[in-house]
Length: 211
Ligand code: AP5
Image (cartoon, rainbow, N blue to C red; front, top):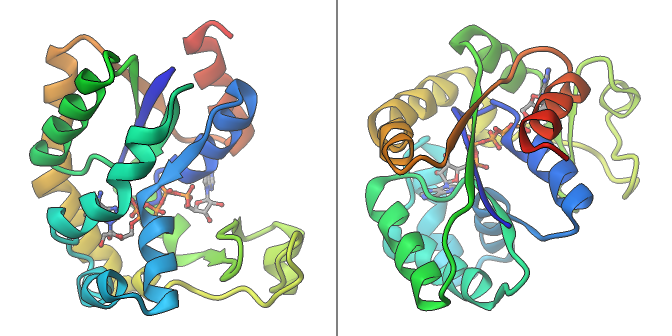
């Protein structure tokens, strides 16, 4: 299946995409993780992307597409895209790429979460610098400040600081939210209430997919 996760920053796209990818046994492709990895390695594309990410802006399409296109083109079994597409140009590029493979997008899962919940979640998120796992208040690893898989110290993402969170929400509303209508018109959008525990949200996804 070819699935896109949609929703504002902090809606739980990564958390749910990871679980669903395991259940469906298809890859989880996160544009944010790929960009952060490029920044960490200091590649030329990573160096160009860094300032946009720090400011909560979208990284230019040319950079994102160069980093993602091969991964999308190479996948034959399907995928769950998390963080891509993020504007109409990227959505059209995804359509084109799938058409060239004689495939089409099956489903867009749109996580519905209030702005307050998003701000609360992002302000209280810790991330593993090695594997990208995320933790929230109450998780044993969050309280210890150490990743349960890698054993390395967790950090707060630069763009999870309050002033950047506000900018990311603004960017989402201006550039990404129009995709809700775009996919609704195509008949592939499915709204998923994104509040409740991660397990409860996952159950709603599984139910909605009839799995
Ligand atoms: P990206 O990494 O994609 O950030 P985002 O879309 O803002 O999404 P997040 O990763 O912040 O949140 P999420 O929805 O995945 O939530 P999560 O599961 O982590 O992008 C970062 C930047 O890269 C962008 O700002 C941009 O600059 C650039 N970029 C990326 N893709 C791009 C593209 N295509 N084009 C251009 N630029 C691009 O959950 C959040 C927290 O909440 C966690 O702590 C989690 O444990 C917790 N949580 C999850 N679910 C629940 C729940 N149900 N209840 C309570 N807590 C929960």
